[in-house]
Length: 287
Image (spheres, helix red, strand yellow):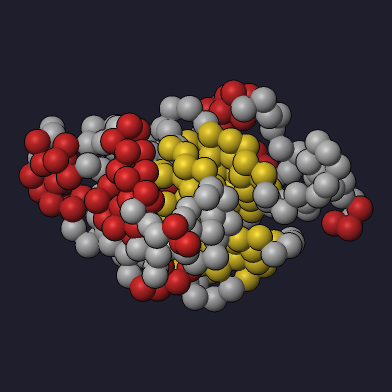
C-alpha cells in the first residue's frame, strides 16, 4: 500500500481540494450508514447495511466501491446501526471503532455470528478525542436506550461535520458539539400526532417519546428556531432517521422550514435543508 502522503487527493471538478465528501447511504429505523471521505481518509458511520445493499446504494449515487475504507464507526448496538458490521469490516479489511459497552452488547446480540471473530476492534470513549488519518473525531454521549450511545463530530482542514441521531432530547452537551458545524445531520424522527394515533403499541410509543427515545419534529423545530443554541452556520442541514410509520418528509421539512423562518434576520439560516431517506441515498455533498 502506498504511504498516506502519496495517496491521490480528491478534488472538486474545478480543481480545488475538498475537506469532506458526505454520502448518506441510508437513514431510518431499518438501517443507517453514511460514507464520509476526505482527501486521504474514508470512514463509514454505522453499519446498518450489508455488502450487497451498500454497493447498490453507491451505484445509485454514481459511485463505485471505495478503494479502501479506513474504519467503521458505530454509534450504538441497535441492529439498524450494527447489523452489517462484521460483513463490512471483512469486505474492506478495516477496524471497527465503538465503545466497549456497545461492543459487548453486539457480541450478545449475535452469539453465533461472524462478529464474534472480528479481530480489528478499537474501543473508544465518549469525550475522548482521537484521529483516523486526517480526520479528528470527537465522540460525545447522547441520551438513548442503548448501552453507551454516542454521536460524532468530525474535523478536517477547518471544516466540521456533526452527526447525531437516536436521542430522546437535546442536552447542553449535544448542543455544544453541534455548534460551528458546516454539515449537520440531525434526527427528526416522528410527528407527535402521527405517533399517538399510529400503529405502534402504547409501550413502544412511550419509549419513542421518552428522554431516551427519539427526537420529534417539534423538539427539532425548537432547536432550529433558537439562535442562542443553533448558530445557523451549516452549509447543509440534513434531517435524518425519519420514521416511515410516524412521520413523512413533507411534515419534517415544513416543520423545520417554519422554525428556521422564525429566526431573526441577523441569525438567518442561509444553508440548504435536506431530508435523508431509508430507501434512497442522499448526496454526495462536498465541503
